Amino acid sequence: MEIGQIPKTNGPVSTEIKTGGWRHWITALGLDRGLRCWLGGCGAIVMLHRVKADHDTDWHGDPGLFTPLHQIAAIIETLRAEGYDLVNMDVALQRLALRRGPRFAVLTFDDGYRDNYELLALLQRLQAPATIYVTSGFIDGIMPDWWSALERILNQGGTALRLCLAGQHHCWPTADPAARTHAYRQACSLLRVATPAARLDALRALEQDHALPILSDSGQRMLSWAMLRELQASGLIEVGAHTVSHPDLSTLSVIEAQTEIRQGRERLEAELRSPVRHFAYPYGDAQSVSGPAIALARAAGFASAVLSYGGPVSTRHDVLALPRIPFGGADTVQHLRLRLTGLRRARNPLPASVDPGARIASNPLPTP
Image (cartoon, rainbow, N blue to C red):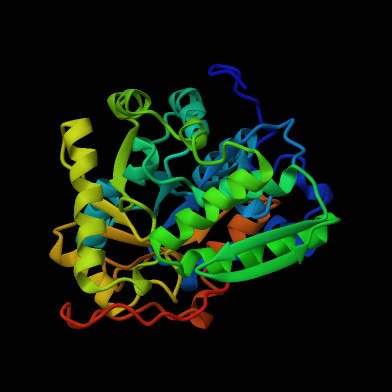
């Protein structure tokens, strides 16, 4: 979709009532609003990643990373209809500090994908700010978004995926979509905790075996620095840091984690020529973000840092461990309204900050 060709929506609920089921009836009756008054906190930070074209019919290993542009418009309209002010992270922090004002919502997009450039016309039309958390090594082309590379290989077809990682050989069948999804998740769980050198060797072997330029074309999936400067100059999009190479911080030593956090920010500031105040933890789940990682973000001087889970925001949350509400894939505005209630929060306690001198590495095998 070209910039300027922004699809219209049919209001906050749109046509999704056909498939909403019980979610539709809860939201249609306004029951979620009552729960939100009780558990919904003072605001919400919505987590998104990629902008999906309406005609995209490809198989995706993680559909949750993709949101159609018309759905992003529906998110904005729904949040406003539910009484949320759309603000950037700076204003959100002011609201948290003052402990008053109407509920706020922040739209955030992780990693720095090139399709995020399509957001500009939509945000300008709806006058909605957003934050993009950028992995600097992706923009520079020194580190690929390896999960997208893996997805491209699996979309090529074939009956099996063979992965050689750190001397270990793995093989998964890929003859049908369900098998491909299983292979993708298993390979991602291994690649996520691998050392950068071992991961890169594995990707190079895959590139050679499948005759696909999955490493050299990774830059085409990401914003350029010129695009990023244009987005920032619009006044609607602020840029946050997301490390250099998007590592699982729990697999790194303190020095390695500090370097990832610091250099990612410095690279952004050098290119954008402006301070970068906000940070998103790579992966951002309970496994990858613990007290030591939060302490490192605090020591780096960030004004805020966000997780990838946790529900609505309240004034009791640590600004260096702010929860977010994920949205993507087949999610509808009914899903969003229910997640705004905060009902899920009790099942997902947020991490507590501890001594920054503690070692981060714990090396568990993650779930993708």
